[in-house]
Image (spheres, rainbow, N blue to C red):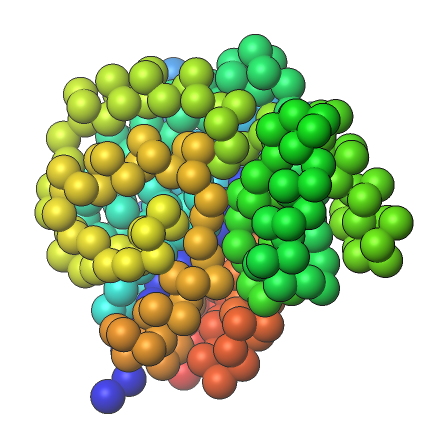
Length: 307
């Protein structure tokens, strides 16, 4: 029996112009975008369509923009009758996944990701940090590299994206030392253009504010299971999800483990990447090619998927 997962991208997938074609060709997407502008009290659509890359890169803008673009595509999928059996989202994308599975309303989810983005940006200013992708070595080797660089400060694995691609996060000096150690050992490490050390202890100052915002938000038990970033296991209970979202800020995203769990334990046989870009589809090819993911961002792509 075939089972489909809907996966939702996180920060880094954004680009100026995202969602424009969809809003012009699909009325419910346009209505959702207008609702977003109304909820936020400023023109997010203008930032998405006409803003500069720098404006869109501001974390407090990026996160709502990606959430809204994913929800716009979800509206098209619903209209075409394309169903799903489970959900997952990469970091920020977890909020989109929860919303898709009925965990909270679009309006509440949008407010939450705006708050999350603002708090993360503030934490990044308070405790400056950076991130780097380590390529071509296994999880244990990356942990060893982090341990070797800890003399220069905090550095931890942040995203287990796929076999051979793990992102580390931490203090600027420690990440720099890790990159230098990688070069000396013949390991490829690529510094990332980010505004903070996401998914590391350096973002801890954002947790109380996020916990407060989550506590004030109406959550519901999920209609479909979420494979959570923190545990790489399924969850539907709304109280457990609230706790996981707070922990997620400083915990590694176990994406590779999540996709393997979805496949082996929940019977995932195919996936749809809902929203901007095709990062998660690309990662899946490295995790397990036998499970085909299709990235959809337009009405045409959704209709082609149905065909």
